[in-house]
Image (cartoon, rainbow, N blue to C red; front, side, top):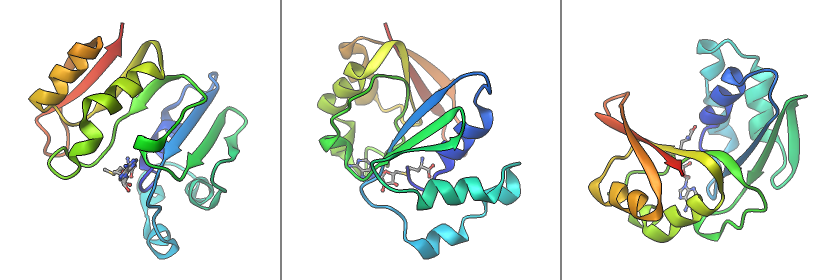
Length: 160
Ligand SMILES: C[S@@+](CC[C@H](N)C(=O)[O-])C[C@H]1O[C@@H](n2cnc3c(N)ncnc32)[C@H](O)[C@@H]1O
C-alpha cells in the first residue's frame, strides 16, 4: 500500500463499468503526520476525500471508495499473507531486491502465481536476472517494458 498512490491511480484509471476489488498489503503503515503531507491530489484530478478515505479507513474491512471500487487493506507482510481471493493483477511494488532480498525469492513469487487467475498479470519495476529466471521457472510469460523514473526496464509477467 505504501502512500496509497497505486490505489489512487487504479481508482482514477479504472474502467467505470467494471467492478474492482483491490487488496492492499502494508505491514508498516505511514503515520498520520506523513499522510497529511501527501499532495497527490494537487497533481491528479481527484477529490482529496478519496486519498483520505484510503488512509483512514479501517484495516481488514472491505470499504467502498465508490459504488464500483472496493478496497481492503491488510496490515501484514506478504510472507504471512493468506489470500481468500484470486486476482487479475498484482502490483509487486516491494523495495528493490538489494534492499529486501527475501521478498523477491522463489517461494513468494510462486505464491503470487498461485493466487492469480489464468491470464493474470504481475507487474514490477525490477528486472533482475534471478527474478526473471524465477518467473519463467514458475510458468509466467515475461514481457520487458520500457521503465520510468530512472528505471531502464520494467517487467510484466502473465500467468499462462
Ligand atoms: C516501494 S514501497 C510501495 C509504494 C506504493 N506502491 C505506493 O503507492 O506508495 C514498498 C512498500 O512495501 C512495504 N513493505 C515492506 N516490507 C513488506 C513486506 N514484507 N510485505 C509487504 N509489504 C512490505 C513498505 O512498508 C512500503 O510501503
